[in-house]
Length: 206
Image (cartoon, rainbow, N blue to C red; front, side):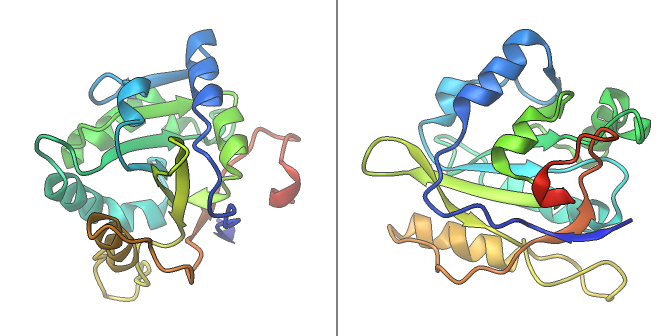
């Protein structure tokens, strides 16, 4: 396990709908669990994209908090849509395949869409680096969904004896609900590195 921080994608970056749509259309990415993915519906409000996987201890540490977050934002109209993505190479980590992701989602009652990014192109579009790696997008004045928060859920870590409470992410969500903007000072997420296909690591992962 390599302890890896988020690359901190620049705030204001648009959500890469085109990459997600293209990867799903060709079968390079597939939805393995959760409610059907409605890409048009994602554009109607804030979207939280989470790079996760099944085996990572840092993901396991926040799983229950993700279940609480899902429950807290449920109900019509959704205050937040959640999209989970696993991009780990199945050549090196087959436990992060479709079966493992479905079992993980079932254990925790996750109903949000969970994608398997088989060619890792979605992860590249986000410059995703670790698991968990959260990205919060919100509608902007130009009609696009733009990045307003990226970084840690909170400052708890596995083995510290403190449960995850999502404090940092929840503060960003509260700012949006109040009609404001999340604070610009944001701390990187820390977790296991995304397991790239051998020999295909992007520049930021080397």
